[in-house]
Image 1 (cartoon, rainbow, N blue to C red):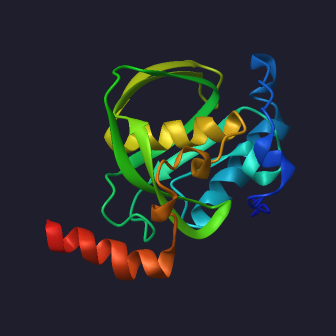
Image 2 (image 1 turned 90 degrees about the vertical axis):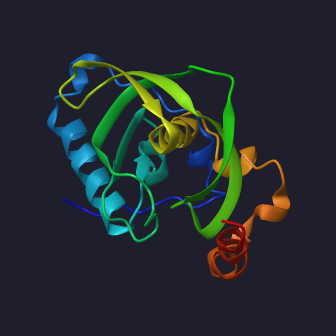
Length: 182
């Protein structure tokens, strides 16, 4: 397995619409190696998810996993999930604002509204159909990664750019404000 180079905000690959993966190609050595390398890269950088175009491969593949993650210490666990050719559909019009970061926008955070519940339809790494409902944080991560595959970066969805913060200032000021109000 290899740790791949992560594209940063400004690189054109992040604004590309990723191409679908042909179901017959999913089990190929090339696609399986890409998935393994994406998982390794996500783990290396403590990501909650990673889309293929973030590692310079504009294909509709994303990996998601949250365990004991120092970037998201309070996040609920999400088992390793490989999504290929995902279609994410909101289950409600209800949205919730939440802090997001991104490996392609290092050391920054911002408040992004996301649907609180979504339906995910995709193929897994074996090419089997997946149809599931995701809520809260899992729904947020799915929407974030699917946005990447559509050429959208979370900063595009920040409604109030005054929340866009360097992580050190976010920890110092925003987390302190939140903790005082809890």
